[in-house]
Image (cartoon, rainbow, N blue to C red; front, top):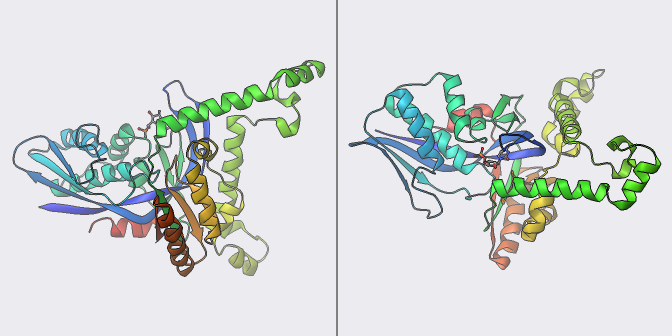
Length: 354
Ligand code: C5P
């Protein structure tokens, strides 16, 4: 018996990086949103022992460094599975693209393994096993619109945002997530030393203080926690709009609540990876501008990249935008553009098993 699954991608609707933690990870605040683009993952049990990863894409590791391998290794012990677990991955999503492809593949492998064995793990064990393999896995055990905190592995389903048309642009480069986090740390150190440079130090000492509150407001770099609180406020206000948008008039509440997702991006959400990834890969910044020129109401890097997404007013606009972007991309020979939709939780679960 072979179980076939759609392994959907995610985008990040805003992402703030907080303090570096003693365990080497960073605090995060983000809203993940699953989208309809996907890989195909097939799980079967053969004769023999061990785990076998099959994939035509040479960039996908076939050994124990593969996230599917790691999750299956843990899960089959817990599930007391016998035989050889075979995982086939049909890769359509970009590798190192910030769309959570490898993480989603692993969750699909886990769900496929449970189904093929006709056994199921308690939901909390599933979450624990997924989080141990990577920060981006647990979101795929929720699907739809998901609040991510901690190192991104603590996930909470929030009211699903209505499906929105989008275009994903995948440039032909891969961005390493650990390197992007390290670049963010350097960026923070540089920003802080610019703020406390010689001129600044004199001003501080003249004003008799040395804490951040004594800096000029326009030069004050908000502390990580402040920046996260700010994004948290935007999330809270916008995700609650369908209920609280206009407490005194039901009619205007309806009209304002039409599209909380576009309201959310209007609130100024941003991805902290952009200022460190764009200088390193200028073509990604170019792709963001191209998305905006192609009609996106909002465009952003997804996770640490390299993929970018744009949100469009309608599917027709997105299809037109993608065609335009493909033309630009073809001239540059460097990126693919695909129109898709965001995938609410119910659809995510309805469509996951093929
Ligand atoms: O959890 P995951 O395996 O995806 O993380 C890969 C690497 O990315 C970590 O080893 C760490 O260097 C970095 N990371 C981080 N903070 C996070 C998530 C990942 O620094 N919240």
